[in-house]
Image 1 (cartoon, helix red, strand yellow):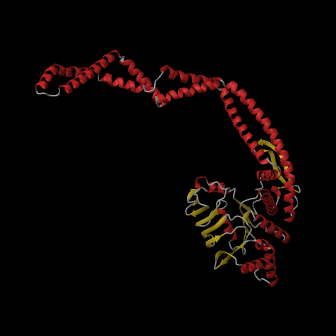
Image 2 (spheres, rainbow, N blue to C red):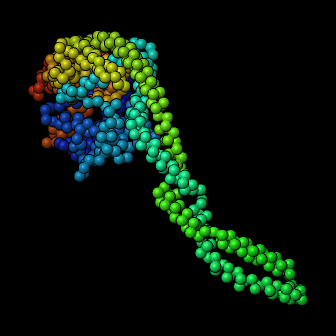
Image 3 (cartoon, rainbow, N blue to C red):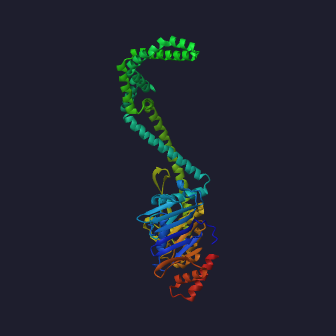
Length: 519
């Protein structure tokens, strides 16, 4: 313990896992070794942890991992405001994943945690990608040259601007080929609306006229009959005078009625001049417009849009020429800056190689060199990076060789730019010599200052270097995983050295190497 490393996976739980009834484990920071006899369930245990990050198939009925929050994981809508991340998986007919109690797909979960969690296994000999190697060279360049990171970001912004202009140029060129057709169509659409010349609210006003026209005769007849009330107006006033009634109120009411009738008669007079057929034709024309566009207002908005398009089409030749000039200038600037960045990377590659080869020498591996070849310009530049180990490419290395190179590269990256995350390592020290095993253990111990490392091991040295030692055994036909006490740890490392029979020299040696790695 006491490495100063971050504790990323804080707790792991699984129920009804193949061979295991229950696993419930708190993980400390630093280097954690998982050991045990062959067939005890170490790989099943590791697979269950990997399944929490979408890196393996879910085998338990229920599993849960509690992680410390990290800026490497963008939780997006899954952020619950707490200081921890809870990943849960439940298997019934199918497997369902949950992140902070919200459902998430396995694919999305894997994408979200990929910056934090990495799996290194004997079989993973095809993951040394040119992209990761390029990141390492850029980390060295940033370490050695002030302002390199900002320069790289500036190049990427310039490239993004260039791509945006290229896409616009492609669109404009495609438009140019059919611009006459587009102009004719836009002009036709505009003229159709202009011929009708609709006004906002006109349809409602016409419908009101139509309603009045349909009631014109009835209104006229009704007013004629009702006007008889005025013949008795004087008689009513006389009666009100005799009984000392309110003649003012009656006069006001009669005047109001007279005004209403006069207004109605004026309206009837206006309607006499209306061309009914024209009104109906206009209503039908506006209805047809509304069926196509939704409303008069939407038709007018569509007309305005077509006017803008028409202006664009008529000016496309000028804009196209201007955009072509801008795009060509951007490409020239990009190519020049990409070559400058490539020169910096070439210098950085030599420095990275020296640093990595120092680790590889400890790991009893021959030195490597980085090869930079040109590729088509993209957002990362013009460089493709590969490794060469005495004439062998990464694809031809054995699994053990490949993973020792990965370990050296991780150490290099950690030294250049720090690091954070979880490394899940499956038998990286399998089939290696004693000296190689010691070197792997030392370098993993060094790497665990920045990473939490959980590693399956069959070698005593990695187990002795560990901050936590977990033993997986079979008890009564059931697999059991438990952290070891200091004495039990000595016994397990002795078993790894001398086999199940054990021997006094193995116990002494176990205590010795534990002490050496603890110093």
